[in-house]
Length: 428
Image (cartoon, rainbow, N blue to C red; front, side):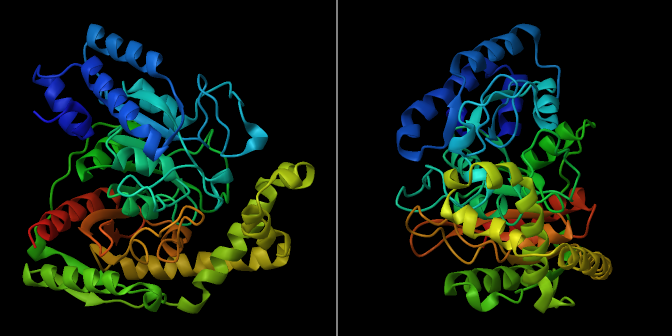
């Protein structure tokens, strides 16, 4: 067996069921990995070592009867926890202790998974970066805003962590850190106890190391029976390749990766056609207008009472967009978006999945900027599910991912498609 910290969540559960692993040994291995690597990666804002080990021993004593019993996991530090601080990535709220768990945390704990700690986030889940570094090369960004979650999973400190996405904050860091990332259909995962950013778009997501783990944790947070992944027959897949209006902003390696992936899937028997969507010139404007107006109100207390303690990135970015946006402009944008959603729903219903970039390229050098969400914001705005799969290593030796998107409420089918695509591209 591999070192326990290297196991995916589903692999670890199988080892426990077979009697080859205990929850305590799994947790101990993950904590040892954190001790070895945290000084370089800096993925964690808070770690509850003793509490995590104690809970693992309790799982071993009581038996692993629940769906996720013994799985170590992390949670982005804008997600409330009753027994750990939640600082929202801001000096303003350092040491803040919520009185209850967010819904997704409470449900996941009830299923037997063990929260190791809180992972680093950007300031209020926006742009100003935290301390985390890319686990594959500390000179490069891990992405944001779910930077610590992606880095912790990518560095095999934990098999799964929760993140959130308002633009590209799960998919992009997951791709940068060589993990499997999942942004579900809007509102599928309850957001109670999660710091709002832009409520029309905010989505709790999952970062893991296998598509099977996505399926497992979707079942956990929806409090339903396990729906295992059933890989689709590639020869029956109807896929679309969507370069998006920002294709020219992706680097050469991204172009080559997507084109090679499309060709490989066609060779395997899939039907792949190029896609266009309506109102493409409006995508960025709609997201900027709606997200900005809402964010400026979400952080109204900090904006009006602690303005000097906010970063320039936050003051001059989405918050200022909102201050500059009128209510009439906001309402016009939300109405336009509702029309666009229905049009896109009708188009996406014709495909099993859409193939597109997860990010413009590899992670960027330096830690001052977490990267662009130009290939993610559209899908977040439309509320559709998306998955990023680690596909190859780029010219700088860093991971690169491919994003798969499908129609709203088709998340389970998207997992089946993603598994098939992953298996096919792994063999290329």
